[in-house]
Image 1 (cartoon, rainbow, N blue to C red):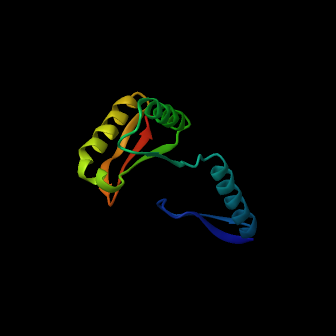
Image 2: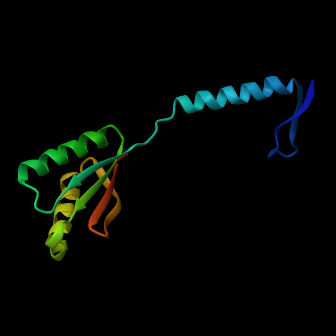
Image 3: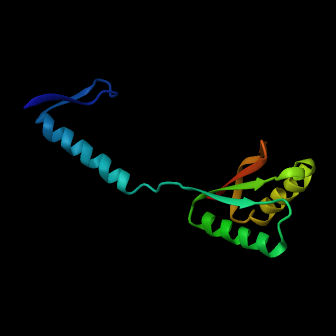
Length: 127
């Protein structure tokens, strides 16, 4: 038997006389059980281009809504190629429209940011 400090934050600290190995095993078991019931948040990615067609755009929006309904985060990456970099405003319009079309099931975590040739946006599911 060992003297084990159970609650160090309490005033005065709480100690018990128990078998330390059994106490440690029970603590690990509780942690494993808590981990089992956690949901791992996944980050899904959707890739777009600034000159996307209407039907393709709608398909991507539906795909994003299904990801968000499963409580996953969604990153929308908009890729610019060649001379498309001169028309960044077109890409921003596509992303703004995406935000408006998914506003019922999503909220913006990170706004549109341009990193090199990729403009990205992160959406999280509404709670």
